[in-house]
Amino acid sequence: MMLHRSEVRPGLVLFMNPTILFEQGVVAEGVGQPIDTPHYFICISVESHRSSWISASSHNGPCRLPVVRKSGHPGWVGRPTFAVPFHRWTTAFEALVRASEGLDLSLPGLRNLAALDWTPPMAVAA
Image (cartoon, rainbow, N blue to C red):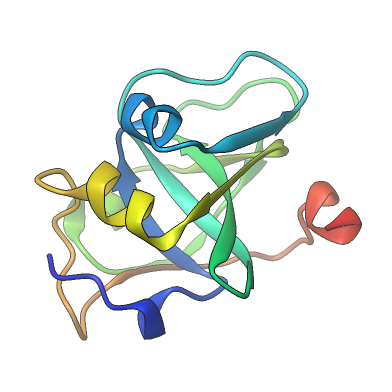
């Protein structure tokens, strides 16, 4: 996968293991219980050496918003996607690398991307 710092920007999507994110010191804020199985995460902001992410699911549910403009690996674009905008995960670059290692199938120059048609509520407060 070889993720580079310059690739981490709003709209980047990585398939990551949240257990590893927690082991690496992620700060999870928001409504509801954090997930504990590998999921796609969408970057919503980058500040210095940390970035904030929201999780995504292929299942609709309360407070989830559709993500319809996507590009990248078929595993990302080939299914419906709903973001969980009220739960923000903030972490350092090194944690992203470890949590996505062996899971994320995107490649440099062909990353998974999402263009959100709405502003994540917690991104406004960041």
